[in-house]
Picture (tube, rainbow, N blue to C red):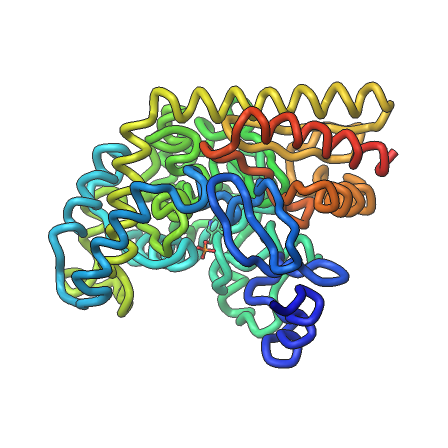
Length: 424
Ligand SMILES: Cc1ncc(COP(=O)(O)O)c(C=O)c1O
């Protein structure tokens, strides 16, 4: 079989930058995957990795979770795309509603980007207002409405607005600092044409940044007082922080929610849902348009039904295990870095964490950007050499899955020890 090096050389000739999504690229070339199972990935060069990228958080249950593979296989024997309604679409929507009671009505889509794009269009249609407000460093997908001062790959590359995005669109996306509800409040005193505020309740695209104590509550209060639609982008946090996502974890009810990633545990499916009076604006009965050939395709929907049922069935073990392992890793890494006198911060919550090489707390985009990126790059490279794969960017998050074992924890701590020694 070809090596990663050779495959990358071939890929670069036919795929721009050799990869199909920007953060997958790192120097000199990324490893090419042969297969994955549980917590592990194997590459074509014969090496294996404990996976903490976890498909950027999508694989809450790990690779190839048996119930999901079995249900999807059964569905594939019955057909893969009908573009006509199925019972399992209703089942999945009802299951989502039972877990997210704020999502009174739901449309199933394919990606998180489609979900946030639809949520924003709905908010504009509902309020008849034009502008939206997002928070600096939050990433809501790769479309023009939200590709302004975004996190994830955009921050990694150091881009503020993508070339090719329309100024006419991006000027209607106003940006305030995460964790700064006063700035939101004062912006709204000046701006009257605002339809919605969209937020990642826990910012997982700037490394990991946690909401300060009253931040989300204040955002809810301000949006209600100003009659704005509050969109919780739970593409990462939905099902990951609890079966009811961050909104259950923090007890805050948004008007619209977007889900993705863990909803399908490795299959392309996402959802947008919220108050009936807003969701009923969707066509054909309403006047806000949304459509997709693959939306509600039975393969992804069967993965969604299987994922949600499995997460619900396992929940009393799932969330405690994820949190226990995450706490274990974080405290071990913190102790190691402290013993080596490496300036650092680790932000963590439920099954997510990230280390920043800085002596100041990381609470927003500007504090995250002050962390030492050269050290992070070194950390990534040595972790990889030691068989631990995290996302290759400071502006991403380390995600645990239910498949990580005690043995994985021990090996991961040793790998971080070696990586921190190299960073020192
Ligand atoms: C919070 C958040 N919203 C939306 C998206 C976009 O989702 P997708 O990549 O499925 O389009 C992402 C992707 O990482 C995300 O992290």
